[in-house]
Amino acid sequence: MLYVPDCPNRDTARRHLDAAIAEQGLAAVVREREVASQEEADRFGMHGSPTIRVGGRDPFAGPDARPSLSCRLYHGEHGASGVPTVAQLSAVLAS
Image 1 (cartoon, rainbow, N blue to C red):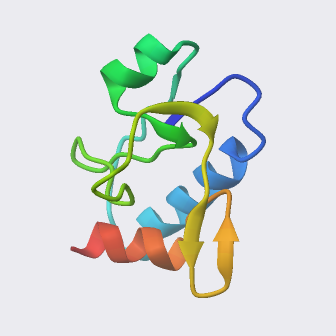
Image 2 (image 1 turned 180 degrees about the vertical axis):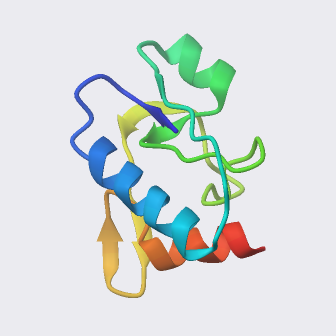
């Protein structure tokens, strides 16, 4: 999980990710990395904070996504949020 310093959604994203991992019955190591510069965002493929990468890729990034230090929005059935839902993460982990 990639995030900027003081990201207001970091803790919630981590809780959702941990819940999705448990829901899928997986054993996983979640690595968190603070990204403090645009150069680092470019290098690590952070598309806003928080960015959750699974298997080395960002499953929520669209084809036009660009690396960014900004806060991120995730779109779901109930509108936009600063974090993906547990259901969205669980679906990604199941695939």
